[in-house]
Length: 383
Ligand code: SF4
Image (tube, rainbow, N blue to C red; front, side, top):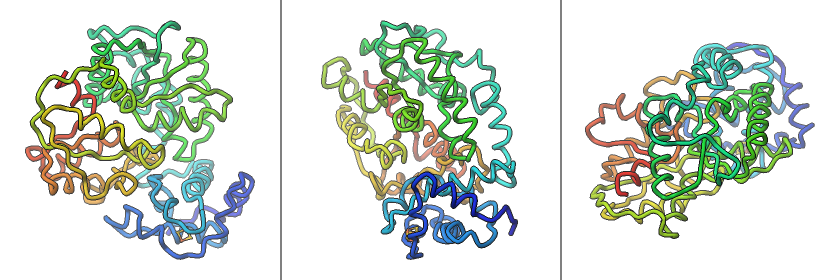
């Protein structure tokens, strides 16, 4: 047990923001019954809330970093406690002290990459658009309809570059008017904010907003539900209001308008994993399913925990950068469930989920049993 500090500072901050529902917690423990951590190890949100409410004691540092902000417990809480806001307030305090130990040690290097190069990998900002070379993607111009914002993972990660490329190819084939900002983009800042680094979030957001406004961006098309959530629900705090569209929302529209013709045969059994920040946080459940059901020959089956009940992949809340024991990864559960329902492909619509699920499939020796795909990769195959 390590001590960080009394929580009065946190309680004051939560109250200042009008979120004093923390004091209404009556310790029923319903949050713990739905928390995915309790599928892999013991963890108690109820206990953390008690500690924060009374400002009485100390807290194990590791516990304050566990919440993946999946959004399951706020849905279940009978007292309207804002668990995600409360965890972020606690983390802001820990970040203020520079406390990053154990599994969250990488947060320090991630923050320096984000501050210096605008991405968590500390990759050269100048290579941000390298994924788009040779496929005819143009720089954004004011007369284009969409700014396509692929996110850091789809810009730099070798597996996820394929998602950005598939998306660009699908958009081009459908005649969508879009361009990219390349090195002028920063990370949207969603995950670093969840780790409690509010100042860095604001810096990234303000630089992005300047780049968007300077370029005349009105509509932003995203691959990541984390970018979606941040641009749509958090950037308005800076008095801007861009129209934000997730690619899984645009695809059914393109199919309906006859711009996307799905002609190939996809004779595979497929299931869909709802990303927390697309589904539970933003209510997009039907669009990706509607698209998959349009694919000729595709046999669609649901996972046991779907839509609002979807189990988090484990990568939200900044955990994408934390070290998680191999046997404690939530994505292992999803891969198992997909295999149990007989699916040969586990499709999703989030770069973080793909990272986690690809990793689990390899760690669990299921590489030959199931494939993990982004929804755009399926569509590209049948166009
Ligand atoms: Fe407290 Fe809500 Fe959790 Fe019950 S579900 S213990 S009221 S935070």
